Length: 398
Image (tube, rainbow, N blue to C red):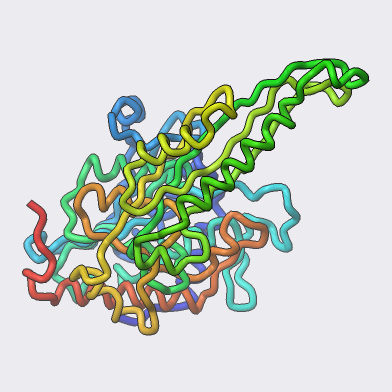
């Protein structure tokens, strides 16, 4: 089960070089299919029915504009009776932003032991590592292994949602998100919200005749900070309690007014609400609504809506994965991810991948080639252990 580091780095670079900002993933999925075929694996590109998905009561929300949704399924055939294991990786990425990059964000440059570029860590590198792991063990396992390369994770996970609507007959799932080689067993949820605060306009020269919407927003910001303190005051999930801030509440965008010499009569704010592990997202929405009652004129929840997810540390699949990544430990993650879609289908799921989360969504994103090799080798061990496990150790799904 040898992993060729040079080829792993080159394949990751080739995928990074295909821009795939959320909403425009097809070219990257096609490139991923070519990489899979070159490794001797079966790849199938599929277009999902957007209208049907948007009408589904479980639709997870969207933020990016799109008129199509594609997914790629890569299969290492086996005997389904020996089990079916899913690997899942998203190929959509956030934009490069307005900061100045040292190297072009789409360069895929290989230098100083890293692959550089947008999506290298989050999470094209981990997805390519999973692909190489599949190729390494395809002749050494009886179980069927399926890699789902999906779109739209960054804005709600519609790609994974669609893939599971098509096929959820998996015994377990591993997602190689950038986790620093630790095994994420619990992920917080995240809800996107927008609010409006209204004031009364006036000429700035007689500002006392108006009421500034910016001034009216300041108590809203204080209330959001207090709500963050409240939901983090007693974190009862053991893994999430180890985090410095398990359930962040933040405002990412503000807009106000029309003219510099006018008292602004409106302000809009957009932000993110952390959802506690095990908490119903509707209860999280209601709690934030109560916290801002009387302070805002409008509050709505838009875009991606991430529930939380949890696979117990003592679950047989978690116990199978942990020793396959020497030195790893079970941890919780404060961000939303596709993990929750699989858990919602009753599929035990963990996330383990390379380092680099601190550079994801930031300037000069990069991923360590050594980390990628360790991820590929660890996943290969998972696949081999999964195939050789006593069948009863992971409860078959009915």
